Each structure stands twice: as structure tokens, then as C-alpha cells.
Image (cartoon, rainbow, N blue to C red; front, side, top):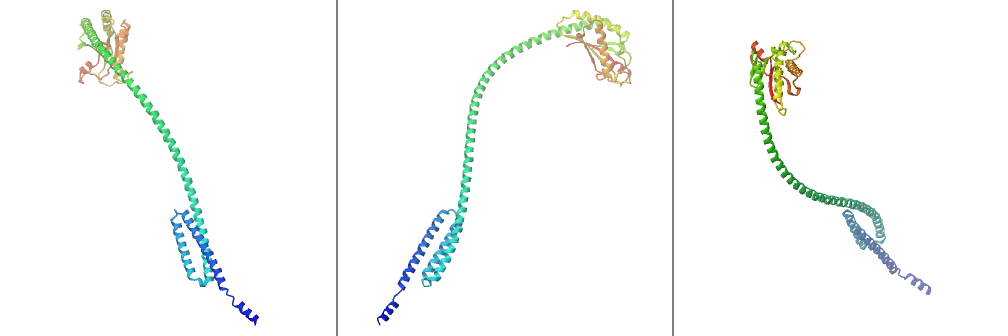
Length: 342
């Protein structure tokens, strides 16, 4: 009987409180783990505060965990199912944690890249500051140079003022010298005019018998036939005789005119407008120039100083008669002598 009582006593041991304690401890461990996980989620969310998408996902997971916690509280009687669900949720949370850890690492990598970029920008800024400092130094140097140039400009302006004063004095002197020179030139022109009148007077006396020699203004005009044959530039004997008279008058003129008067006898050759018909001359211009040169060379051979003679050829381009008849053409074929200054 005692044995049966003892067996009844053994059967009467209540294991439920111990099970409840174990279950409570397990739940407390789960709650602690959940608390740790929530704390980890909190710190993770604080570390990636700048990532809005990650925060949304974390908040979604926290909401899911809260729902799971409420579900666990409501289903305490189905502990095994709840534990399985919690285990599955923990697996999901661990995967999500790893995913979030990857996102955190990516964010850290991006932050590192941003830090590198910021470092590069700081280096560029430092270079720009150095460049700006060099530019400021150059500006300061330029300002100094400008100041020096202004001082030089002031000195130059003073020198220019003094130079202008000297120029005014010099201009006054030049004006006075010009007036004196003009007066002297006028006197020389008057003297040359007087000697020209005397020279032409002598030529008129010498050549008074020649009807083919005319006086036109300040020129003696000889018909070309006096000196040359048709289309020729060689002096005829009769022309040499007339030039001998002219040379004698010029030799006397050289003795009479003072040496400081710059006079010359200009010999101008002219032709008519008829074109050249073969021969040694290609144009009337060449013929007129050759004739005037022949006269000058002959006068030089008679003792006239070359510096007192000028040869010029005008061809048919300065006619004295615009007609086209034989007489007009004959008048245009001429040698002119003009006493003038150099």
C-alpha cells in the first residue's frame, strides 16, 4: 500500500511549472534577442541615416518584426509553431541583415569615394588658391610697373613740354629762315629773269634772220627741219651752224650769270602725231628724246658745262597746233629752248 501510495505520489508530480519557467526563460531569451536585433537595427538605421531607401526597408522590417512579436504573444499556446515562425523570421531577418550589411558596405564605399572626391576637390582648391596667389603677385607687380610707367610718362610729358617749347623756338627760327630764303630765292629769280631776258635778247639778235625760229613766251621754238632730217636724230650741217651761235651766246651767259644761281638750259624735243613708219625709232617719244639728247651733246662738245643742260623728250603729246594739216604738223615738229632754274 505504501508502495502504491508512493507511486501515486510520483504520478502526482506537476511538471507544468517547470515547463512554464523554461518557456518563460526561452521567451525572455527570444525577447532579448529581439531587443538586441532591434538595437542593431536602430544603430544600423542611424549609420545609414542618409539612405532613405534603406531606412524605408528597415522600417518595413521593424514593422514586420513587431507584427511577428504581436503574433507570438497571441499564439503562446502554439509555441512550436511560433518558434518555427520565429526561426523562419530570424532567418529572414539574418538574410535581410546581411543584405543591409551589404548596403552599408556599399554606402561606406560610396562615402569613401565621396571622401576621395572631396580630397581631390580640396587639392584643386589648393591649386586654384596658389594660382590666385600667383595672379595677385603678378597684379601687384603690374601695379608697380604701371606706377613706374606713370612716373616715366610724367617725365616724358615734362620732356615733351620742354621739347615743344624748343620746337616753337625752332619753328620761329625756321619761319624767319624761310622768309629770308624766300626773299633770297625771289632775288635769285629776279636775277635769273634779268639774265634770261638778256640771253633771249642776244638770241633774237643772233637769230633775227631766221623766219623759222619763233619766240613763244619764255621759250625759243626751232622747227625740227632746222636741225634734223625727216625721222632722223643726226644734226644737219645747217643745224650745227645755228647751234654754234647758240653755244657762243651760252658761253657768254655762263660768264655773266653768278655761279650761285642754279640755272639750266632745257632742250625739249617734240614730234607730230604721225606714227613712226619703220626706221630705228619705235615711237615718236624715242625720236623726240634722241633729238634733244643730240642737241645737248653737241652743245657740250662746244664747251657748255653738262650741269647747265637738260634733255627732255615729249613725243607728240604736247602739240602747239591741234590741226591735222601739213602746216600744223610742221609747227608741232620742233625743238624748244628754255632758260630755267634747277
